[in-house]
Length: 226
View 1 (cartoon, rainbow, N blue to C red):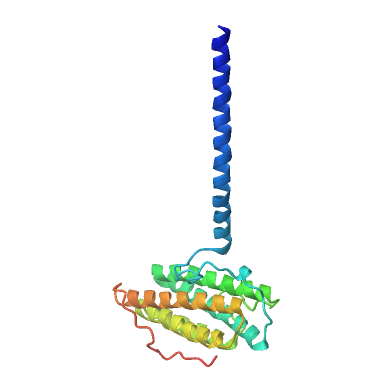
View 2: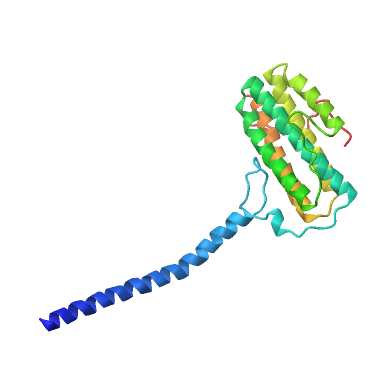
């Protein structure tokens, strides 16, 4: 009787030891995985281009801030409002025509605005963004009014307006990218440019009935000197 009880107790203790050892081994392997997951969340993965571009897994916070020239500061303020122009126009076109492409890309433009705002905050710049449809830059205000008027004529015209905005945005980003050596600004501009190419393709594809053919590079009379 005593021997049976002794054997039972030994078996129970052995079982607890196995469980404890197994739990310790699981923790040793699980913790690095959790740390990797946290790191991935912090620095992000590869974007799809439509919602901010291809970041390559690097975020602004991982790049040291550099000195900011007056020209670089002016460019950031302008791009903040230009991304806002895109968002505001697309929101109006969606309200007018109910075409989903406008709603989808407007959400992406809000992400672009947020990326520029992060840079503004990082360099202590005052945000120029006003209420929807209102702009600090008078040239952007005039362009917004012009594009809203054209996009209100028909859905086809509204889609052409979308393509126009993306073409101008790409050109302006290219110009400003060539005039900065700040790695954090370059990262954001490249992300925004990648997304703008995707947006341009989406507008052109929608104009052509969804066949996905791009007409990037075709001008339509809205060139600006910025």
